[in-house]
Image (cartoon, rainbow, N blue to C red; front, side):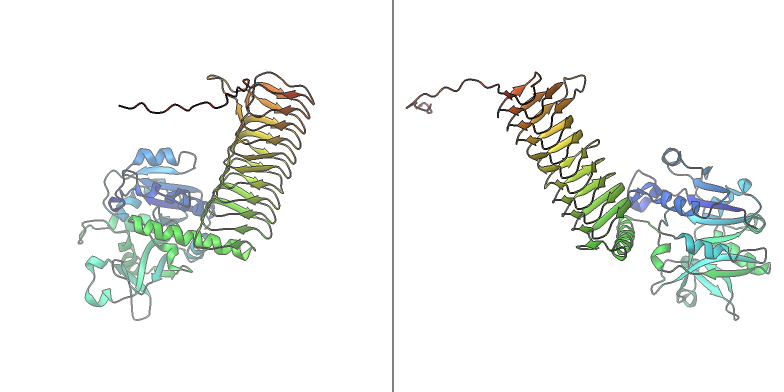
Length: 455
């Protein structure tokens, strides 16, 4: 029996998050918690994915519109059993796996091991043994050690509360079993809800054995109910990423001060200092060094490039042997050829910077193409926007742009041309020419400065 349905419960409000956003849409490592669960479920190649929605239903539909999930509305939140029942008519005839949208770190291998135990004579239950089990449902076993029931903390006796093996809520069974047991659920308990966990006792009564499995670590099955738990899982996730990177040879100054919100691929001998954030798809070539407190998003940095502290790189490609920063900002469309340099307090956007060219400090270069060995002086601005449209600036090989120059696009600076400092250039400059536009300097000797008038 290989057909699989995955039901993800995501209808809760998450009152303790103190937020107008549905709990499962709060981000962990740059994407909503429920999407982590969906991505893990996808790795099991299910025939159908069902997401049970309730609070903030339209927000969930919109956020997950690009998935293949079937949305099922739980108009009233009457417990986990009631939630799963809303998806009942859409299930196939194979296995059913029940997951939770606020348990984002569950692993594919853990779920696969659980599903392997399920057939018409066995259902699967994921449990976890905790030193402090308060608040969790307890697993009750018979004299033979078989799981026969789950008792919720509020309904448990003192002896039952002493049990350390806890219910994670994650379970698997056949669709036939589920359709047999769900209609028999009762809300006669302290919460007045339909507990999905009650199917464990039904299984035992029907002679269906409850096969249990446990995750590799307890954090896999930890759920989120408040901001503190959210932060704890964020750090657990990031530490896992850091450990993987270090196993691959990446040198991290402090594994506890790294955030990867997407996919980070690194070559050999990459060094990353503290406080760096990587978002989207980022690739670092061999020997790349990232200084402290940098933000890098959807970018590729070639081998032996050095990124100094507090730089922001977004949608850029650096060919290699580049120097960037400190305090540089590379915006989308920036492309640096080999050995190009973008220094401190420089902003680039939609700019091709040629091999060996330098924009060392305090400049804005946008919608521009720079040839080889161009030197852009401090305070240079490409005036690319006329209030309605963007225009391009070209700088030929070996051009020298003096400090505090304004290049009014569209404009072309020829090969080997020199622009005098403080110029505003609005007309093309020919190859190997000098262009200067400056007001005439006037000196007045022994000139008295103005002083404040006596009152």
